[in-house]
Length: 137
Image (cartoon, rainbow, N blue to C red):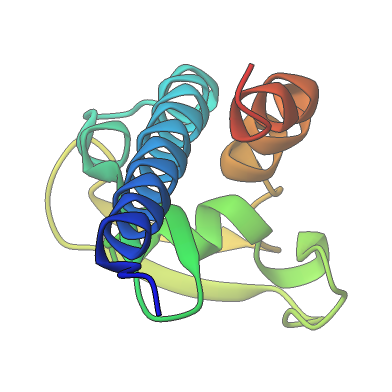
């Protein structure tokens, strides 16, 4: 019986190189989406824009790329609030709130904030580029 150890090792090395290449391509795709999300993001003090980041995770069966913001208010900017909420699940009546400090200090009445889906826009605007990159192009 022939010794197949060299062949098996070459298959393992080729598989590893393919996985590394796909992870690298996912990283590129995430960077493109992150860049455009930052361009599309509304800016007041710049905290939201600065918080946009990405990560790539590899497990036994998947390579997953995420572009996200960890700020608590990011979903409200992205999805909208009140009568402007994207899914229609926002508050239907106006409400009053107080800003304790900063340039918006004082009491305000609002019906909500219009959505600014900066992440979705970045993803959709780059869909063809993402597909090319992930395909190895």
